[in-house]
Image (cartoon, rainbow, N blue to C red; front, side, top):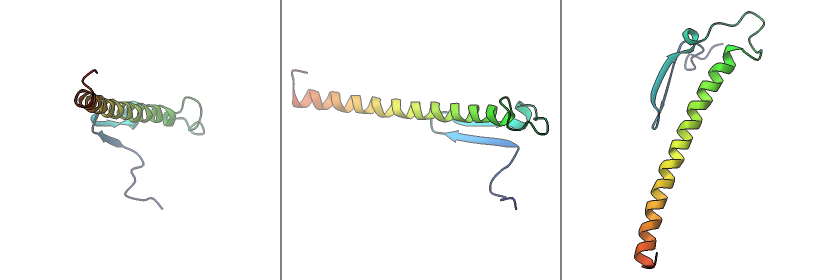
Length: 86
């Protein structure tokens, strides 16, 4: 039984705060696999996985950069007000 809430093919939309919305149809982007070769080294599933993992990693890195920037500003203010020698 197929869950209608989980898309099995067609366009995917991945919206993240840092990357914005990305919308592509992986069935159009990558050619279909031959029958019996769906899990080989060069199968479509691995290309889609690499795209999704790369976007996820970039989003995580951008999030860490934002957090670190905020922490550096906070630390610089604290250092300035608590210890004028900084």
